[in-house]
Length: 495
Ligand SMILES: *[C@@H]1O[C@H](CO)[C@@H](O)[C@H](O)[C@H]1NC(C)=O
Ligand SMILES: *[C@@H]1O[C@H](CO)[C@@H](O)[C@H](O)[C@H]1NC(C)=O
Ligand SMILES: *[C@@H]1O[C@H](CO)[C@@H](O)[C@H](O)[C@H]1NC(C)=O
Image (cartoon, rainbow, N blue to C red; front, top):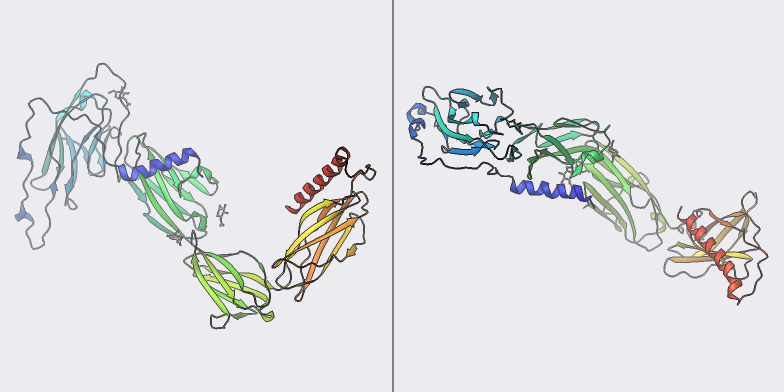
């Protein structure tokens, strides 16, 4: 699970996508006796001008003139939505002085008075001096420009000199670079950017697949201003990169870039040795990670396997998370000649990878699962288990005290297994103090198993404890010791 802080941010991120609409932050009050503006400035479309064969839609201002009265310190938004202005220059003016021509600021106060990409003029921390009946947005068409005029009255605020924090959340205020979807080759570097007109410039926070970039090694992921650079990408850098403009509002603007890393296949195997038996169904599995998707083939003894070979079934491309696919080779009725070395090979335009899986009929290596004191405290019973898909012919147990050259070799009794599970118990008596190791292996018709991991145990038990079976008070040290030994052996088996 994600830490609550990040989770909170995520919820916020999601909320932003749905809720990011221009907020009504200004107190819109009509002037007393306010009348609609006369329309003389708003040119009617002059269709004849453009009527020269190509039907070009005339530029137009869609927004309506407004009159706003606010208290000093407020944030004011003056809208000016336009259409068909591709071939025309657009400007904001106050009292016939330019504030903006296109996105170019013509005012020293450009940090406080901002033109948004949708042409809205935003005035933060409005002051009395900002008042004017003559805020004009214009499409500079020659000879007759199209003009919309707004009126703003800013009133001195007497009681509260502390202005409220600016509220400015708008959708689409962030521009991403280089694109919304970026394809990159493994090993190359990428730089992504999120630029904004928001003033004052907000801090840009980056998330990779909803994880904060702080969690990444700064040598691999470099955040610099509005840009993030990944030095040498690998597949783990595929995903959604989100940038959030921390403007202090509840719904900060955000954008996202999808990064697709192209990389050569990488194969993992579930089991590098598969134990099976005659007549059994055997299953070999390779998990392939690649983009673009890889083509998989199975090989045995340098020969490529095909579906047609009767008892072989291949399942390709069972989808998994994150561009991983699972590929299964099934041998329906395994016979002795099917045992051996298999290879799965994955190839895509970026390269290839191969992994080997052994299919064998011998027993699996034995695993120790218990060690118990013998009743009279003179030794220890060791217990193993293993899998075999054919009956066990014999076991071979060898043990020695650490430092001794010679092994004691014994043959534990073979007992029937349940299904393919076999248990082996062997009591080792007359142990001398010291540390011992024991190794077991098993043989069936297909041969010897690999040796078990050496099991280390201790022969260091008190030899002269009085032995009185039914006396609880005396028995307890023995039990305690047995417990210690079991715990010890468990600790070793988990190594
Ligand atoms: C708002 O403007 C006033 C002067 O008009 C200035 O003293 C104040 O510091 C400004 N507040 C902010 C938050 O910029
Ligand atoms: C990808 O690169 C990062 C940083 O260099 C590294 O920590 C990670 O293990 C790599 N992942 C893979 C799948 O190679
Ligand atoms: C593989 O990765 C790409 C880019 O990262 C992604 O668009 C695609 O959905 C992924 N496919 C799968 C199956 O996860």
